[in-house]
Amino acid sequence: MSNAAPATAQKVVARAEKASKYYGRGDTAVWALAEVDVAIEGGRYTAVMGPSGSGKSTLMHCLAGLDSLSSGRVLIGDTDLSTLSDKELTLLRRTRVGFVFQAFNLIPTLTAAENITLPTTLGGGTTDQAWFDQVVETVGLGDRLKHRPSELSGGQQQRVAVARALAQRPDIVFADEPTGNLDSRASAEILGFMQAAVRDVGQTIVMVTHEPSAAAYADRVLFLADGRIVDEMEGPTEERVLDKLKSLGG
Ligand SMILES: Nc1ncnc2c1ncn2[C@@H]1O[C@H](COP(=O)(O)OP(=O)(O)OP(=O)(O)O)[C@@H](O)[C@H]1O
Image 1 (cartoon, rainbow, N blue to C red):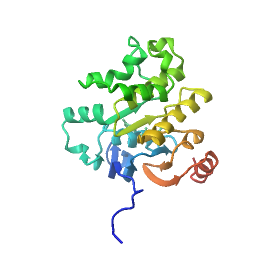
Image 2 (cartoon, protein in one colour):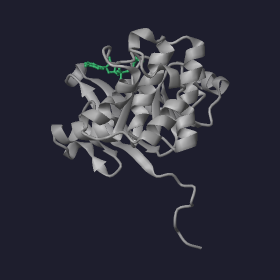
Image 3 (cartoon, rainbow, N blue to C red):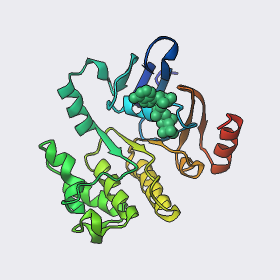
């Protein structure tokens, strides 16, 4: 028998090691993150849950290189983000990380198609047409590509934002309350598309959400409280997530 990891073992795409973030000093210091250790495995859909102020956004922003830690470190692949210059960090975010926000953050003067390819264009790259077609098909945007954001529903705008995040084949996509502005039908569609991106093409997604029904789309749920990961769950269902939140006092 060899000691090699089983073939099913997933590669770690992002990790935090003793990641701490505090604001202020002394008695009034707020620990938004307190020595968090977490590994995000590739090709999996991870949800982050916890009460308001528990550190969800801080963890996500630090993992994504949008914010820096007070101590500890974050790695994307083998790259320790603290060793990068601002320029290198910007390049890493542009080329290796995708983002989906609650507010869709589309450019109003560009069409859906132009919004999707913008990050690649900005990075000086060209969009792989076959991949673009597959992403557009996955999120069901085929007949809306020439429309501007104002001509699209909220759900359609968020589909454009998801397609934009996936279009450059980033190592990891971070989604911050991606369904916070959507009704339940549009939410289910967006969550389904993100799940399909994980299952069908092996995308890695980390999503912050308050909704147990949204977390149920994930493969794994991390529960935060007071800046620490206090529990986690594999194969969540809405009911199990609700029970866990109740037991954590959330
Ligand atoms: N710029 C800041 N200055 C001071 N304190 C901050 C700052 N940003 C966040 N905090 C504090 O850090 C803690 C964690 O905040 P964070 O936004 O990560 O929580 P969250 O779980 O995402 O909350 P929510 O669900 O309400 O969005 C909170 O106590 C918050 O008040």
